[in-house]
Length: 568
Ligand code: TEU
Image 1: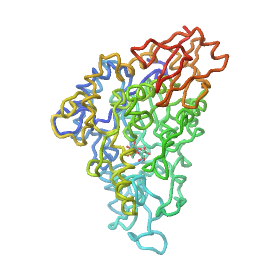
Image 2: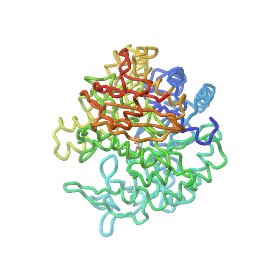
Image 3: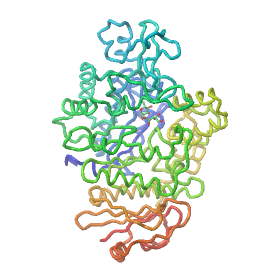
Image 4: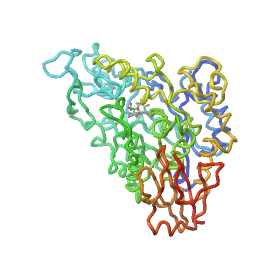
């Protein structure tokens, strides 16, 4: 895997360390816990492990608030543990990607403590400090320098009484935004990145990297009717110097190093922007996480979701396949630590759990791009059945709930939104076995284990050919065995119903036909004559209807049936 674009045929597995495996009984997952579970990852066949943040942190946002970039938080272990994990992954032929959270630090980071200490401090300008609006007094409602609403509710500005100014925080009040306009900030970040690469890590997943360049005038944003705060997105998403900063980072950090993988997390990114990020000639990042398909079901807010129409998900993914067909590269994901479980959200976890989990996996893994598997997705883990607010832990959920209830939403309605969309659904402990804490911990888990771990767990699935795990493993194997999966072209095939997502992949005469019914009802595919002609002699390669014999390519599709045919 020394080709410069080795990551095109790789599959990445995301570990959310807090919820993966606890080794010391404190109820929180840790690095030694991950070490104990490497057989699972190796058996699945993944090439790269991405770790959500394990750095020193007060955990206001589960580690996305970093107080020391060069040390491991005690709850997760030590630098020695990290070195051991890195060596063990490398020994098994897997790479390690670290989370890079440099849009903001923790308010407990030494840089911010200095910056906050006085207006004259040399690091004052490392963050975004601003006086109250003209004619107002700091701390009073409406005195904030802009009207922007934080991702986690409330204003993006926190009043600092001692130094008499506000600081900017797009996320939690404990996550002050770094000022990337200041070259010292950028140099400090690049230096830290080089330090990790020198230690042997293989790349970075860059948290909200498209928010690092703010419009220097910090203009107010539009306010939707009935809302107190405005949407500042236009002022800080894809800001004026974003690509300059990323190209500088590439020169300063990545040039001359081989075998790395970089992925930018870019909420709200457009197709045109994604092309700018991932066009290899621009030397920015290898790929980005776009958000279109995970925003389709958002209503007025993400906590007021709407059901998707048949075909909406497929149409969105198709658009991105087409858009990044010739230049650039897609990352492929349905889940991460911020999203509900895909089988609950896009599938049918109640009536067609196995079929819909495997249908979604088929669709995802055989698209053009680099697939990301989020821990537990390979087991078909589902949303948590939480019904009371004290079962939730996530700052976004707790703040949104408080906000809703304060503005008059009925408690039951606010809870309903969380029951569909809370980030905590992705964060319940990995279900290793059917024992009381699912094999995750000997102690009290920091977030409740999903009671369905008695049915849905790794011990029951690994080695069972009819399991979501083994099916996912087969899909990953296909990518490794058949270059057409990684490198082939993509073309959607019309199949007569929007809920049928059918597409062809082609590379040097090797062809695949992927046909997935993304619905809980049967659909009969209707193909054009040229397609029928091409696939009449096709050979079934994979289907999620075991133990039934594989059906012909144009047979009626049962609920969530998926099939893959090859031309040789
Ligand atoms: O997320 C950024 C982001 O835009 C979202 O996906 C976020 O979860 C938002 O609240 C969705 O409503 C990244 C991290 O993945 C997330 O865990 C962090 O909380 C956030 O940045 C701040 O670091």
